Image (cartoon, one colour):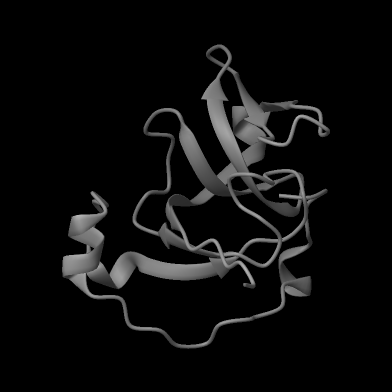
Length: 127
């Protein structure tokens, strides 16, 4: 999301949370194993509408390669992103921003490191 971050600049907004396996199952969320689940806080506006700035996002760290179209936590050219990935050809991926104000980007597969697949967004809205 956003213009990317250097991973060391990442601020931790949520430290501990327990999510029941029953809730994840109700939501249709499948994952590699419970110990691979983590929460990351979204940042920036490039995925706005799907993931808003500061929304908690549940990711599966057991997914470290492209397993089909979806939203992933990736490092590209030294910066951390949450982007929708789509294969372009054998050597490239599209890094897609859901917010149409942001341009999609093309990345060489060899320049991408997939850290996790995004499974669920907890959209926080003030009422």
